[in-house]
Length: 147
Image (cartoon, rainbow, N blue to C red; front, side, top):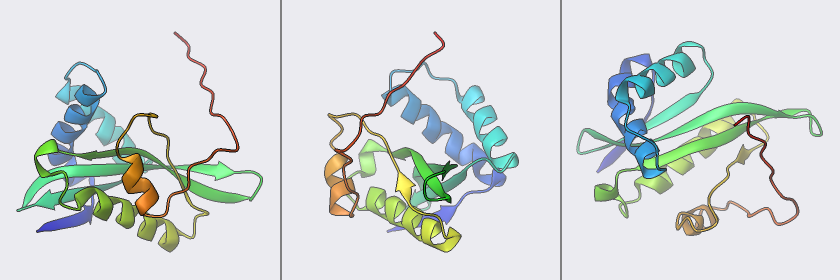
């Protein structure tokens, strides 16, 4: 069984190792202290919404939302920036539960919707589409880096 909660700053010690695992998955070097500091800044400054998943009372996954805005629709939107579930509990519905909790938050906040970006080879695309997310084929996304 699993439980999804909205995280607060008191949950940072539980989320930081998950964020570190997530970053390692994406090729970054482990740095739990930096992960903890990053989470502290986001939560203490009210810059993100984090949902934390527990399986058998242990933290096993999270999702993190950031607010952005649509000038065209004149409405706020959430960017679903991070979704992570530990590999040992994947396939148990925890990722779907986290995504559904973000939808509930979006509706309750009266935001326009949720945006996410994922790698073209990410198998989670099947889950997104199963839960009603639509792949945007009408536009491209570009990124400029300071590096």
